[in-house]
Length: 385
Image 1 (cartoon, rainbow, N blue to C red):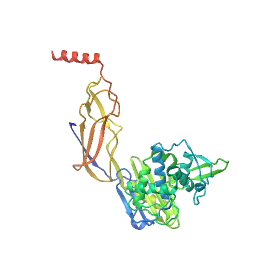
Image 2: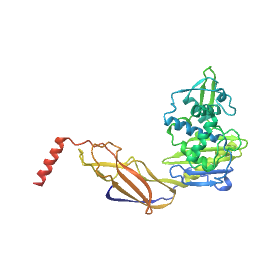
Image 3: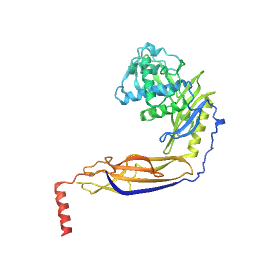
Image 4: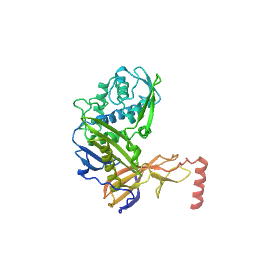
């Protein structure tokens, strides 16, 4: 790596902001749930926690893992959103919340996912478990294996639906990890904001669906979540909301009633948005104030930008020093396309490395032609003579 002599100093000084809506601040006494957690999605910084490592049943929030495995199978090309699935007798016979699927009926994958995301359909979950692993029991093994990979050390799944079953538990902390992994999948958000919809069955019936996550209707920025309820687990909720460049994740387990779980999650999110912010260190949409030399290009220097944004999640009023060092890759050559890597940006917070982001071309640079090369040689020779 050939290091560019460049060091950008960034000083963040955040002052208090007047909030134009009603603040609701959380104290331990106010969170009426057995456990909860609030964290920043990008940095994974925990803002608030209460009994976050306590093992408890989480009811239908188990379906977060079911959905995660479904979307991973889609990403791996093992399931297509455009294919149809045939429903078994076992899947169609599931109790609890369901889409009332017909045994032997064929349903589009998109419709089945929709029924899980917005209506927590147990029958659709089992149908996917059988499609992916052959049986629900084998699928549960896959769920537990994936949980271990995510560092969910206090979680054990016994089914793919969250229906009461011995030795099934998780924690607020683990649920937040699991939900954060799910919302990496942009396709998930195509379903989460649907408020009401319906499934058309092969024999002509129609099942109306209503989103169980009421916060997508009444909370500013909420675009996803998963509810859960059993008598044993109480009222549970994992939810996410995004405002500006900041996304938060909140989990509530064991609230006494449905209204309280939504109120508790709202209070947690309010705390995050009211008291914290994401300061932009690197902006991937803007070219930086220096260029990188290109060998053999029609232009000698290329505009550059960060490959991704870099934020600093902090409490409002925080003052922090940042330094950004840029290092150019050795021998950058044309042709270059916008987005091609040309170096690296190293971000330091208080002289400790905070993040590393690829430096990429912000424009296309064509390779110089032979005649263009001769013309440049002649021009340089003329200037030197």
